[in-house]
Image (cartoon, rainbow, N blue to C red; front, top):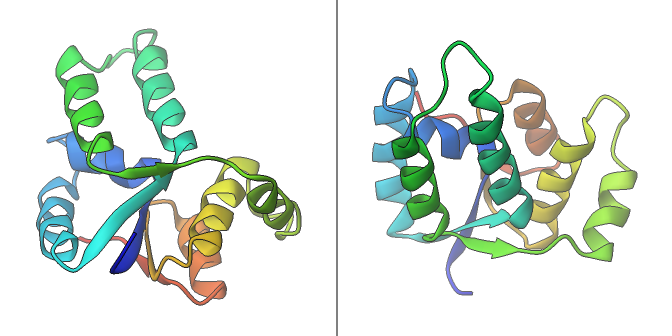
Length: 140
C-alpha cells in the first residue's frame, strides 16, 4: 500500500451509502477528494458490522432496502480490508475501559497500519482517535 492511509469505520460507511443520512453528501465529497491522495482502509470487522446492520434492520420499523446492501458492498469493494491480527487484539486490550470492544479493534487496526486519518461519526471513537494522534474526521 502506498500513499496516505485513511481508515473508514462502519458509521462512516453507513453514512456514505444512506442517502437520507444527514452527512451523506458531505462525506461523499470528502471521500472523493481524499481518495485522490490516499488509500481507504478498514478492518474486515466493518464488513460484518454493515451486513449485520442490514440483517438487524429487517426487524425494525425502518428496514434497510436491498439498495443499501448493494451500495455498501460496492463501497466495501473499494476499500483495503485487513484482518484482525494478534497485534491489533493486544493493542485493543490495552485501551481505556471507556472504549467499546469493537471500537477498540477499529482504532487499533488504524494505528497498526499507521493510518493518518480515521473517519467516523461515533463520538467516542472520534475522541479516542484524536487521543492517539490521528486526525479524526466527521465530514459535515
